[in-house]
Image (cartoon, rainbow, N blue to C red):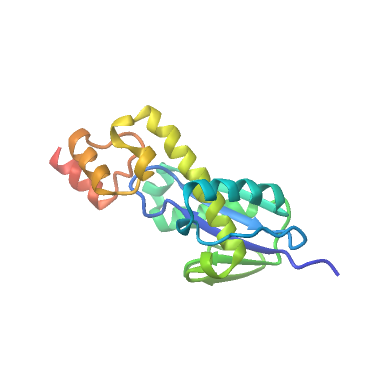
Length: 191
């Protein structure tokens, strides 16, 4: 009998004020264990990067998908997240028997689906998904920092920290800001 394919799904960037939402779907290989997987926010950037490489090398399957800025603005952040989650799971080269989604909302998917609050701490596959999604999004935000250095995306990765809000006040939003977000709308109205 073949091993049951368990998929974990997590998103990164839903709460940010800039950039795309990244979602990852991961099916780990029980024959090839990886130690140290947990919620990506509990790991150093260096440890996340090392684990992300190991996960991508050893997993049975993985896929990273995004929801664009336009989709976030058009659909709203929740529906854009669900779309990215669907893309990640549908992008896997094999179909999972069961999919665990971090949080309390799940997109329409084939097969058995279960949501798990704080799933990145409880389900190793969700933890793995959180790590590869975070590393991919952070790399993209560091890349975008080259185009928009005045905002400090390499530091806060698009989240609305004091540094980021101060830069928004000073420079106004740029092309990758989510202009439908209340804090950014306020800046736009005052500019």
